[in-house]
Image (tube, rainbow, N blue to C red; front, top):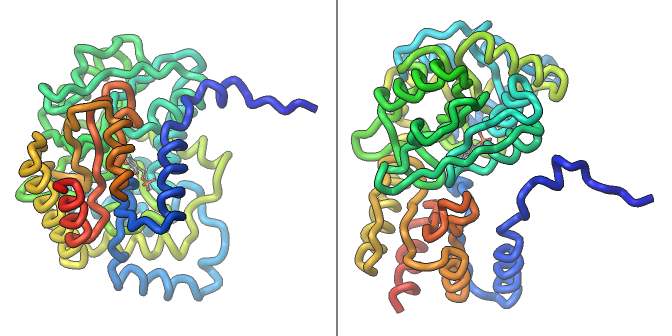
Length: 381
Ligand SMILES: Cc1ncc(COP(=O)(O)O)c(C=O)c1O
């Protein structure tokens, strides 16, 4: 029997990084010293108190059973407390919060809840590919890509968006550009969405990865017509734990819960306990001391890398948030990436995040300072 992928799978774009991964593996096999700035997976450890909380929670039998797919009350309450302390926003832990298996699944599943086949979903370009692929295309919807432009500070311009879309994704602090926004920008996007009957999905996965004096806002500070996705992955170096949250409009959260109840059985309870303890480290708006040390390390790496690239003649903005440095590499981004790989340096070509990312390159700050200096030295020579 010939087995054929469903049309929706066939519509997914080809995996652009396959060739690069193959080249990297070949280099590694040849014994090359590879400095990998590719994926956004923190190299720093999860803070000790969170690991301990998970270890302790792993023992009692009551934590070995199914969770509700919407998450245990203690974690939903911890998310609500975090929103109150960090953003001065009140949310109802029963109706306006859903625990998620990392934010990725929720970003994809929200589309299943509200978007019908053929309806339009707005995704920025460049962007985290899940909006257009995992969300829109796998829900049989039409992904409409709207370019982010350097001259607009990579802020999505709603005036360029179709007014008949069912859903819009926006993400600040932004992957891959490192761009940030303020509450008044979010108010504008929310108003535009409300006026056009478009559901506003705000991806705030990097809200806590801020540098200098910048503090990323929540879209809920702008109003309630939104569902916002957050994650413990980057904030607490917990990518592998798979835990996040969705917060916002009661109906939007209810739709997400309904989809999830038919697909997954929640985050393991011992992970939820650790996540509740992690969010409980916040005493106010400021980063808790358990993670501020890690952020200081990323900040130092960012400064070293950006200054080094500037010395090499590149025009590189100093990102105020995220652990990504995004810059115009002055040539075809895939060619630049291959050239870097010849010197054992792995970066991500901007075109992998969408056509509008062409000409740019993303470097993830997931290597120690010495390795960043080593990479700069290799580029210099
Ligand atoms: C913009 C953005 N949103 C969401 C995620 C998903 O993170 P997680 O599923 O680990 O919460 C990522 C991961 O890299 C991301 O870059």
